[in-house]
Structures are given as structure tokens and as C-alpha cells.
Amino acid sequence: MKLSVRDLCLTGLFAAVIAVLSLFSIPTPWGMPFTLQTFAVALAGYVLGARCGCLATLLYILLGVCGLPVFSGLRSGPGVLAGPTGGYLFGFFSLALFCGLGMYAGDRFGGKNRIILPMLSGVLGLVLCHIPGIIQFRFVMNGMGSSYSFAGAALVASIPYLPKDIFSVVVACLAAMAVRRSLSLVRPISQ
Image 1 (cartoon, rainbow, N blue to C red):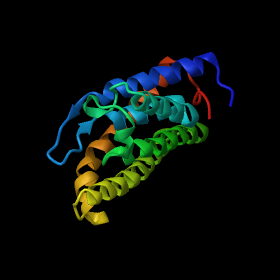
Image 2 (image 1 turned 45 degrees about the vertical axis):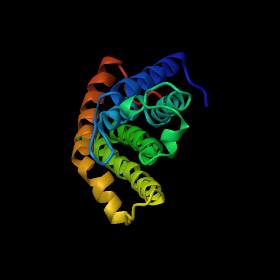
Image 3 (image 1 turned 90 degrees about the horizontal axis):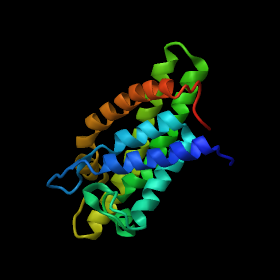
Image 4 (image 1 turned 135 degrees about the vertical axis):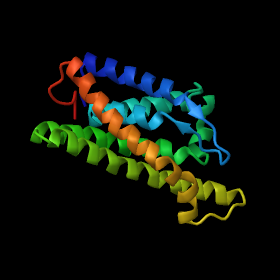
């Protein structure tokens, strides 16, 4: 995998964007805050493409695991990955991947597909992001004495966030189109 200097710089920049936007969080009583992480990861995937979007997400997660307080609530360390919300961090790879692939497909097919395919692909990536989040939330919480079913965990850890997350993906798609125009990108940076 060969990346240009521009790809590397933009990947690092978007890892920082994800980190900064992750700091804006609204706590909830059930421990899963509302954040702008979904918007930031989707934006990275849409602007950078599948490969560099996933790399930016990986870099963000590595920064947090190494001790920088970049996870929501200024948290850090490997314990966050093993905690109730850690599944969403793993799921971010699906979100970045599908946003990047959707933008690529939209560019390739053009017309109305330029908007429709990236948005649909982003929503699919979002669903694939929520599944490991629900599974890990259920597993960790049940290990701590709760008794969540999959549906119960989804009602607490996913469904309240879906409207905000879908809105975030749509806004990220529209914002990415403007960013890509300003960067003079005809297609994603790399696939």
C-alpha cells in the first residue's frame, strides 16, 4: 500500500479531526454519551476514501489506546476498547469503509448517484457500526450483572442514537462534497 505525502498528511489531519470532534459529548444516564464521532468518521471516509478513511480511524483509535485522552469524555487507554462502548470504536471501520466506497461509487456512476450512493452506503456502514456496538454493550453490561437481551441492548445503546447518527452521515456526505471540491479531488484520494 503506497500512499503519497498528501494522503499521509490528510490522513493525519482527519485523525485529529476525529479526536477533536470526539471531545464534544453530552453525557446520558445510561453511560453512552451523544458525540460527534460518527460525523467525524463518516467525513473522513467520504473525503479520504475507504483506505485512508480507515487509516485515519485506526490512527485515532491508536492515539486513544496509547493514552491520549481522545475518546469521548476525555477517556483513553485500552480499557475503553474493552468497555461497554468499545464495540462502536471497532465499528467505526465499517462506517469509514462504506462511506469511502459509497463516494467512490457515486463518482463513478455520476448523476443523482453522486449523492444517493454515498448516503445509502454511509447508512449501511452506520448499521454495520452499530451491530458490534450493541453486541459489546450487551456482553459487557451482562458481565457486570445486567441482563440485556440483544433487543434490550439495542433499545439502550443504539436506537436513541440512530436519528442523530443518520443525520450526521447525511451532513458529513454533503460537507465532504464541498471539502472534496475545495481540495480539487475528482475521485477519492486512494482506494
